[in-house]
Amino acid sequence: MTFGCSRRRLLQALGTGAAAALFAPFESALAQTLPRNLVTKPRFDRDPFSLGVASGEPSADGFVLWTRLAPEPLEQGGGMVMRPMIVTWEIAEDLQFRHGLISGQALARPELAHAVHVEVSGLRPGRPYWYRFRIADALSTSGRAATLPAAGVRVDRVRFAVAGCQHYEDGHFTAWRHLAEQPLDFVFHYGDYIYEGADRGPSARMLNGRAFTPLRRHLGGETYSLDDYRRRYAQYRSDANLQRAHAAAPWFVSFDDHEVDNNWAADRDQDNTPPELFLLRRAAAFQAFYEHMPLRRGSMPRHGQMQMFRRAMWGDLLTTHFLDTRQYRSDQINADRDGVLGQAALAPERSMLGFEQEAWLHAGLRSDGQRWHAIAQQVGLANLAMRDRDSGQIIHSTDQWGGYLANRRRLLAHVQARGLTNLVTVSGDAHRHFASDLLHDTGEGPVLSSEFLATSISSGGDGNGQDDDFHRHTSALNPQLKTMIDRRGYLLCDVTRNVWHADLAVLHSVMTEDAPVRSHARFAIERQRPGLQSA
Ligand code: FE
Ligand code: CA
Image (tube, rainbow, N blue to C red):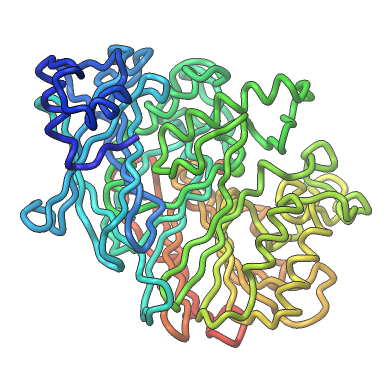
């Protein structure tokens, strides 16, 4: 909830303890909307902005600004007095906050863990802004946001990053620090922002076929309650590199599975928990996700659901369709395990997107004069074949689009029927970089599109590079796969009028804090000529 700048006087007066009755009648209505339990003179012994700042969901005239008051982020309630407080926000046209300064006030409420979501509007299109927050004598760090270009205007270039899968125990978030130094118009976080698992103690476990001792440890057990999830987000969000990346550019976020539970699908988890019970857990997870992300009010959980599929346009250059491949999907076949794709995968009533989202996506995927379309989603569309270690059979992931083959066929048939030769998909989840062309699962017909599946920020630890059986088998079985690597990093996309450039960034280690970033591979896609080209 936000208040306009003109109401500041009123709030200041309230801060001195004045009663609503002192105000002119037209103002008393507003005074009545202030919480009766408002803390008018908050005091903090520690920095209440310990979780940093963020911006997201840019439009042509604004964006969302986020922070959460948490002087003791790992304590219950974040160390806050459980009453509402007023936070001041400031936006300027320069980092020094000298030009075009505007400010306003927002309520941080205990119901939302004292998170603040300010939806700013009325700004100029296609330019950066800087923002910060104040409460009492505390000042937050400054972040950089940006508005989208005005609808339809000519845009020559958009640069964005794709990243996700940031297991806190598996490695440092060094990739976020490198990413924060890139000139970016936005970041797409495909999901696995947290992992729900319990602290498993200091001893080694298996990772990539080797014993691995956790670099850092989760606090507490597996997350179930709202307080569990809040504490997990607070732990992750305390990471300085992650905070830098949030402050550097506006983000579009989506959840994948681990924000709730591994491989969940709509109202099902992987453990046969009764749906009505799983939905209680999902509701707690959704609330904590909303509380910690720069999302618009339109995505606030309502009746246990979140509206997450949406699109954004960068002038005439790029339309991005952000999907939700978890909330409406049919349960996985083959008990979630990789397997042979039989008739079950082709059952037309099974869906990855749900039929409402599918219709929405198809309506938006059309030749409309945009130079490029992008699908930004969570799990691989490429449907890569794998070799079963024991039986030698060809198998596929059933959690990715291959397990929803009828839905994949409808999507690619739509792309082909509409003659969309300017579509690129970005995704994640597999903890490796994959760059693939997209073809019908029968292997027949032309290259229809391409997918960059971004590797993880830290999940999987240092990884095996290009030296393991999975790499050898999968390379041999998938001619449409142009490269892959098991290292940590992120994807950079540099979209211009006629060519889409992609750079697969990797770090050789996430066990040290200062590993440099390098480019594993670069690709180019020409508009009107689908298919990856080495660049
Ligand atoms: Fe992951
Ligand atoms: Ca995942």
